[in-house]
Length: 588
Image (cartoon, rainbow, N blue to C red):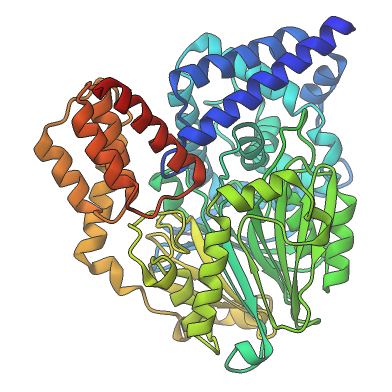
């Protein structure tokens, strides 16, 4: 027993050190890359767990677990293909609108919901699986290490099924019947679907990647033109441009509970952004997490349960409080019935609710604000070192400039790319409200039951409007359309600008700096910097390249340029300063 405890302590040290190094070396956007040393530490961690825990009873039970579906009636869907972008089965539909957003309407008991969902989106879901797992295969090319990773996932997720509602498991089972056979070597289809719903949480917990480093706000009374509650959010989840292409807007009418809208991607039954027919809204923002020892309830299932069963804020709080999560997360909940919004702050060992007083607005970035977390050291470090507080202050500044918001003004806030006092901080800077990597942006008007969803690219495309009162009624069946197009918000002019074209080119070139074998000319580096000249990262990347080439004088010039720009985090600034210290020693 003593040896086992020491092993656990050592392994916790290994992954904590790996996460800390990864945080300090994180560059610009979320991906699945590690530096060479991080990889060694990561797989040492996996190997130890694989050896110590693969034979445990808990793992055997979890990998053999199949949900009980005997209580549900089922009609196997026979999908009718109307055209290349429209499919139907009974009163379930999938179609693509002119803004290239997929719209899915499903209804039924939990098992039927899963089957209807899977049958209609099968091709889209299998494509999303391929995109996601190709990222993982790129990160772990070795077959042996892939085996270790599978062993780790089985161990880490051994308790997840015990913390997920049985009806959601039945729905997932139905959905998983339409998953690809290609990835059965990772896990059986049902378990794979379950694991994927915890992918955000696992990435957040294990690598501290802040994969959902989002911004959201709610305003009402004197802060809106009509006094109604208005909510906006950017969901800054990035797994590559391909993953974000097929956005899916789900309209779900469950047999039990409240019909709701959810914005995510094919294969997702949890909720990251959504509103129900009662006017309850949910959005999630990641907080600073400690590294847990096992997966429990994925946060997207907590928010799904709130949408499906809550009619007011008190009911939403009660649902969140009874679930065991394994990461730290802020859930912004808006309520038409309360004409108010609060932030529910959850973590593995704490729970708080942030309610504003004497004001009619609430902001949510990536740190906690409730009394329950005032003395939390991780939260204090997050405020001090990350870009969360900066974006919070930017929201305050934008609300001073825009006294009374409407949906169009809310969209302009979500699209804002500047720093404090309108400073140019470079495109893609995580200190901006619009980081130019969002999977989607959403605007909610809960009292009117209206939702606006952004279209590609990022939150820059046209916002498409949906009226839940009409969609969950006979009006939709008569019109045959989901969107209320006359209320759409036009695309951002920035999409057609030269600056945007430069930014897209910058993204492609920036990824080349990850290849240590590549050599660049001075002309190439000058061009790279000219594409995004206000962004500290272009000088940091150039400095690292010259440092690797042992051209220390050139490296010093680039690092010093980077220090004159708005650097994203304290660890990023410290990394530059460490390079300069090394360079000064070499130049003596």
